[in-house]
Length: 400
Ligand code: SAH
Ligand code: SF4
Image 1 (tube, rainbow, N blue to C red):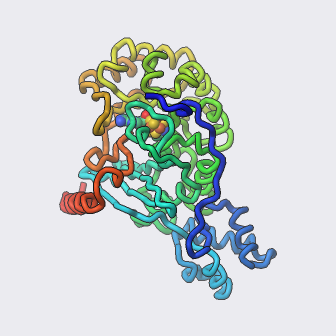
Image 2: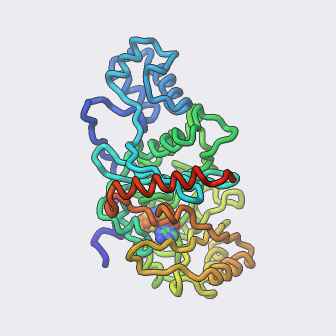
Image 3: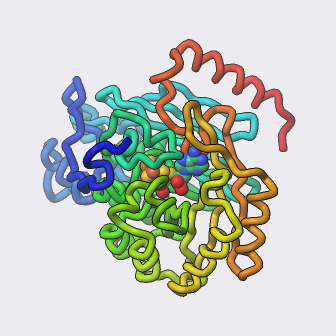
């Protein structure tokens, strides 16, 4: 069923965040200029504001400090002033679950009660945080659980940055150092379409990349879009991170069905936008996400057409084959393993990398496309029980 507007959504302008009951303002998510302005508004003398903002920035994003009292190089009366006007927030954690494979999922609650999720996927050589950019998603892809959520709003920059801060708190990653980091990569691949929340995503990623804070390199950040063509060029020019595109099908008929946005921005437009994406060269390949749906998009002919399209647009590309992650009520099944391997082989043989993504965190519904604020379906008590069980399993498992 198509809901009007779902394939023609508008890039939503930034809304003011819901005010806190105590009247204080969250400094998290402000850019440097906004932080400076906020300090001046609170009464910090204008002449000092830049320096103070720099100090506060360092405490927040380098040290992970949330308590103004701990900001040792700031004068006591200024600390009191800051305390009276501001907080350094963290999202409220509803549940924190750990999968048997080490994947972690946090269900988070915003000040207005809306819920969203972040997922951390540890690997041998990297640790990736999947960050959500919206509560739900308007785009309604047929294989995606998130797309079935009714509630939708953009997350604020603070809520996006907050997911990373929280993950770093839990992983014990303060102060920010380059050696031995657990959280090394970020993917805007959680819930929602990041390019429909462009301003907040841009601001949040700017903060994460800032050289005096978390300093995550743009090469370690990937933004995944379902193909919002008009915003792709802006993402390249203004954010400059790696691009992943959820292609999932090679014919208009099938892509229209499974990614309804295709009716607005077709495959050719999407691929042209990829070809135009700045910095697309062999060192920075574009990733095509391709979910493997049984008898839908997984034939040899589909694989060959995918290769042809990538060649036609001369794209430096890599294809990520994602085995479909099932969820209750889904209309599709995952392709058989041999089929996925065969599909991968065809692409590999054409000289294009096509790894099969191992599903992670399926047991806690943390895998791609399974996110949907679980509290809508299972009770809190049940979630707590499952979380405790998983945590126990995780702790009991021999260290890898
Ligand atoms: N909205 C953005 C980013 C979030 S989805 C996008 O669509 O690109 C992250 C990835 O998971 C996308 O490639 C998405 O198509 C894929 N995905 C969604 N549901 C899935 C499912 N049930 N199984 C496997 N992958 C899924
Ligand atoms: Fe939205 Fe991405 Fe899910 Fe499509 S796959 S409904 S764009 S989150």
